[in-house]
Length: 199
Image (cartoon, rainbow, N blue to C red; front, side, top):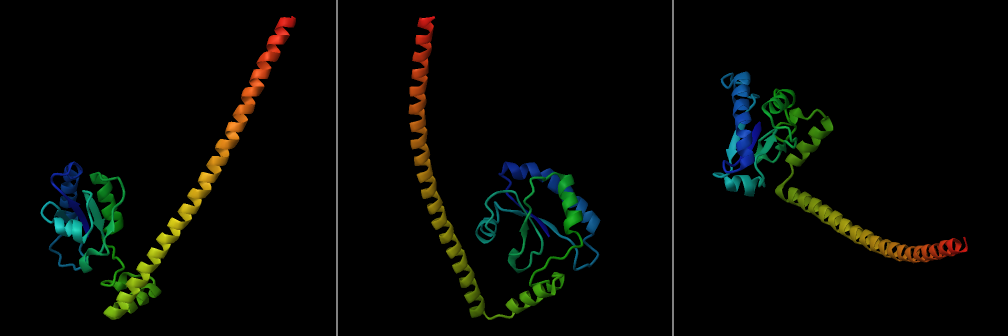
């Protein structure tokens, strides 16, 4: 799938609309909706002014338009964001034809698309776990994220303290050098003045 999450009131959504409409017409014609192929490509649009809970609460999209692509199974948790700033008709058409059409994405609903057998085994193993086992995995990963954040904050504070110390030393050294420079310039001025008077 290739999906545009948009809102009619959004200026950026309005700017993209002509290119998107042209894209829908071109891809629908090229892929054919009536071929009965389960692997056919779908291009869609969600009006987030009408589906705000779905867009914002469930999917977490607050900036429009947001473009996503990939396997939309399992509530769209495997959809990936299209992050390129290139959103002309030509750019989007090229992206679809080169990256999406006739391509399968590796997800629990489509394990066969996972080229790596180790990846297939891993997904299948997780898919067979009980709710309590999956909850434990989620908790472990959340703990790792929390620890990583705490480690980052601690290191950031250490670096900030080190920077503050270096900054103070720099200011002190700079002030000392400036005082010496002021003295040298004054002495130089007086020496030149004496030399001029002697001449």
